[in-house]
Length: 348
Image (tube, rainbow, N blue to C red):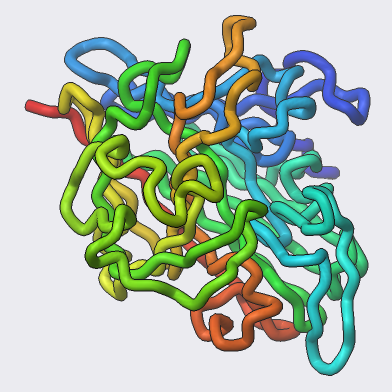
């Protein structure tokens, strides 16, 4: 007997002519999370806050996801963030990648976010998807089998686990690109009023194109020091931020980030997001170029109305051997696995 394919709720029409499939996860406390097979995207997250469900994730209509360019909630691969000049060398061989941001490659080119993932298994509080990326996809070496698993617990925590394996040495850096607004993700409000705390003592400077242009730098004495919680707007557009219209930088996490890497707090203190991860780095992006991104209601978001907290390896690692000890490259046959938990905590 052939196994029946796993399907969710069908809506709209995707670029491949078939409907999008939506999967809704729920827990005992009433929290709901919605995942879509297109891009294996996290498209909604409603958290109980003082007796009411609050949407905390920026999102749009299903049919707008393939067109929007902000990577809303998408699974990113093969390589999250930027690879300079869309090229790198590995094992003595040069590889040319598909450029999609000027001369550089961002988020894997026409990457995993633009593909339909195959549902593998699902239940009330979990769903997992598979994706095959063939050798040469966007210029990358190796056949890669990737898996993403979403699981919601009864403590209002969502864990995202990425796994992959390649038959050749290759760059590999998978993440989720959700944008959070803990006060008003539906219509949007200035996320810079949120408080942010990071378990990181170093950050990576970049140029105006987001390409690393310096070694890692200590956050002490700079606007990048979030070791104690502060409003995002407090030191905004100072120093290296001026080149990128705000924060769009990787922070090298301290070794205990598996406990807590970051804490984001709503301006009124009503809700907190605590992030823990096995990843070495957290990319903080304050939605500096969100303007014009469609909302779920048919409107558009403005700049700085959501913050992406992307757990990943350092950008452009394939061109920086000195950073490869922090991840971003895998050997043939090696089991890649990274896990991040997004824990939502309401004020008493």
